[in-house]
Amino acid sequence: MSRAAFAERFTELVGRSPAGYLTAVRVGVGRELLADDTATVAEVAHRVGYRSELGFARAFRREAGMSPSQWRASARAVRAR
Image 1 (cartoon, rainbow, N blue to C red):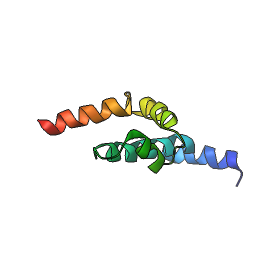
Image 2: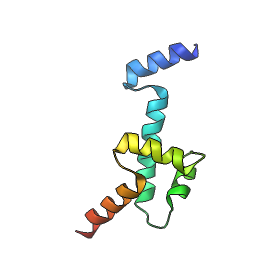
Image 3: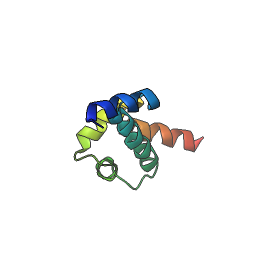
Image 4: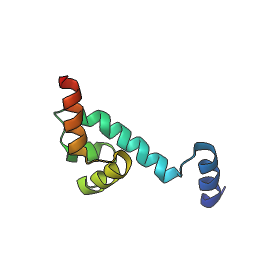
């Protein structure tokens, strides 16, 4: 199967492109890791497969609507209630 055919079929079945799906999974795992206050954003970025903190932060903002640091702060606020 060609790459283009795979991407088309994947998108039909999953509703997202393969790259979009992978980004969503990485950001989802990143959210879980960010809930652990001991990991820095750079460490989380590396653990979910990004080469740079900036690349992770950009993808995170696109998916979550806020930066990793903002998300972490909001998660802390929710836990504190």
